[in-house]
Amino acid sequence: MLAAVDGLDAANLTRAVAPSGWSIAQLLNDLTYDDEVFWGSAIIGGDDEAIGLIQDGWKAPASSGAEAVERYRHWSRRADAALAEVDLDGPPCWWPSEDVFPFPPFADVRQCLLRLLLETATHAGHLDMAREGIDGHQYLVVE
Image 1 (cartoon, one colour):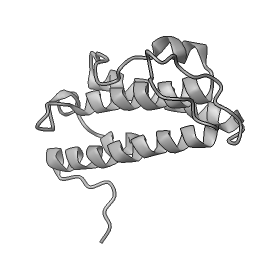
Image 2 (cartoon, one colour):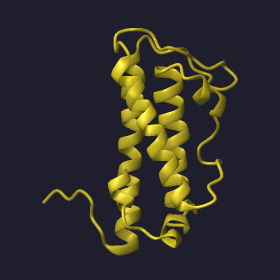
Image 3 (cartoon, one colour):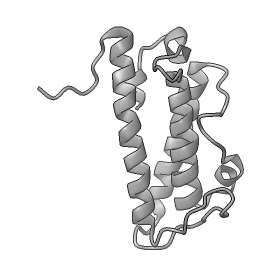
Image 4 (spheres, one colour):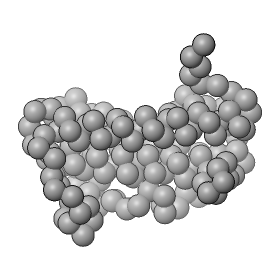
């Protein structure tokens, strides 16, 4: 994710790049809060700070593109640290209340990790398309 946004200036990080109006900074916020904070740090890691930060990533304000990049970098490192310590076959360390996430708990951390990877991979494709539309840069090209 970070390599795909490397070199973009502030204007390109925050301008609308999709017909729905989202920007790369908003996409990074979604990845930060809905994946790295929610799945990686709160559910998988049981991180109290992450639990306190849970919110809809698409609605999280970003005062700048650089702030969104740095926030994603910070929380992806924390989620990586949690993953390095957890038993993939064990239960999630925390599960949100039904009013926050109205789905039954996953059986093990492995399922949580697969959800995190699925969402990240999906948005990586969105980010690649947005970046190519901005400056023609192609991060991953299969020939």
